[in-house]
Amino acid sequence: MASSTAPATPRPQRADARRNYDRLLSQARRSFSEHGTDASLEDIARRAGVGIGTLYRHFPNRHALMNAVFQEALTSLLERSRELAEAAEPCGALVEWLGAIITHAGEYRGVSRALMSASHDTSSALTQCSVPLREAGARLLARAQEAGHVRVGVSIDDLMQLTNAIALAAEQSPKDPELAPRLLRLTLTGLRA
Image (tube, rainbow, N blue to C red; front, side):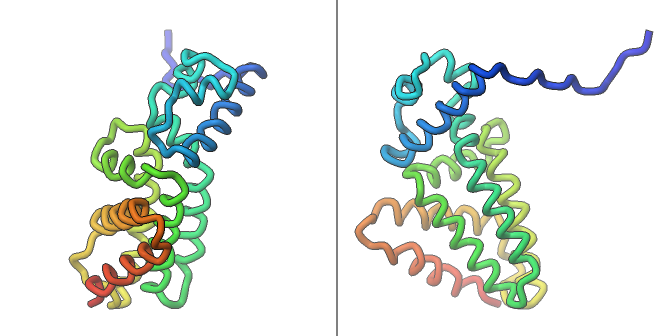
């Protein structure tokens, strides 16, 4: 008797389960935007019109919910990195992309802290966000290094941590909207070859 190693095809969600999932994502986006990524999961479930058990059936933990919320922004950031990979000025492309990450992190208070804490935790659901971002950034960084614009010893891990730290600093100083761009420029002067 032969055994199959093909992965099982996931069953499609029932219509009511899909509606619950969509309402949970919508409420999570709203709550994360208003209250940060530490928003109450119970409140998100209540506002979505479901119980906390339903939330946990769809999203086993906070990072899984955050990962689902951030997929749209992740897709946009990855698409932008592909566009910038062909830019005439590799260093400018890298800087623009890092700025886009900081802008995204600023949409939800706490996202930069969560990404920093999950950066070395391969079991975190946020790894599904950070790994593709690192890979996209590594390609842009390699182009800038090959062009001689960025020192060879700079790693994408260093840049991602710096980017998240800048976003976190900006989050703590909301009355200074120019803080993040200013810190990014200051940081990048030290990267130049």
